[in-house]
Image (cartoon, rainbow, N blue to C red; front, side, top):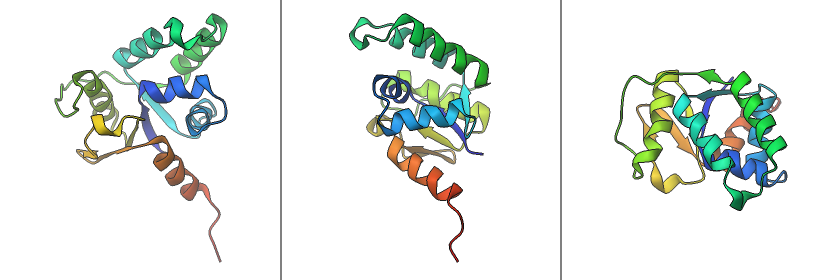
Length: 141
């Protein structure tokens, strides 16, 4: 099972539209097809951003999603600060990935991150979904 960290934009996009790849990625986490890793810092960011009025996410839906994420996540406590992302606030995703020995950080903002960081691949939602689909596809004869 892949170990992943989802950037906040993946979670928000997945909630705003149930037809895109981010929604499929949320479903993978909710159905425990991937192991989603979180830190308290990331969860707080998810919560802050999902509360923004501009997104018009209903309180009941928001609280349900946050409750699910809280219960299914593998929680990490990053012990190393890094300075590898263009946006300093995005370093928290790399720090969580390092602490959880995660394989992938999935983000809609690839330009903010290095392509790889200490063996962790940083991918777009589409790139990650394609890798996931290839890993579960039945072997060709």
